[in-house]
Length: 143
Image (tube, rainbow, N blue to C red; front, top):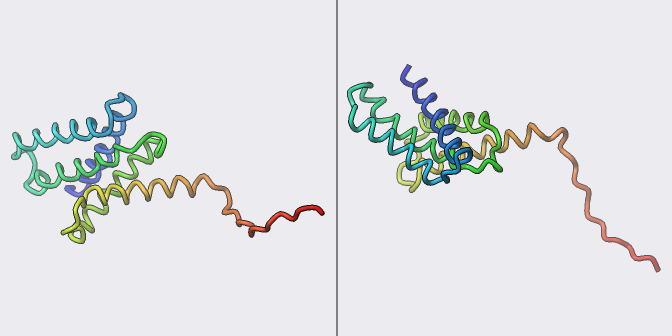
């Protein structure tokens, strides 16, 4: 149950930040910081509402997934792709977060990986066939 709450948090966080950033034109930094501040303050003032595990991890997952929502609508034009990126972020956070110890910006790195996975799926699903690139042959001038 706690794991599914973290998945839901990642998805909702990414989508909310994306909406505030792109639809309401607040900018990427303001959208991420504002929503993260609200969630952080909520868990600071009401730490007993959830278990200790969730009180510790929900704000971290939320903040990390807001980095996904900072993406431009020109890069990821679909709410579905943004939500999928939030889901991928949660998977990586839950399974690989110890590997990022010592790396600066572990949440940002995980968010970037998540966006790249979603972006690659969008590109692959649009292409009908993988086209073979022809070899370059220089033009011959008529003499």
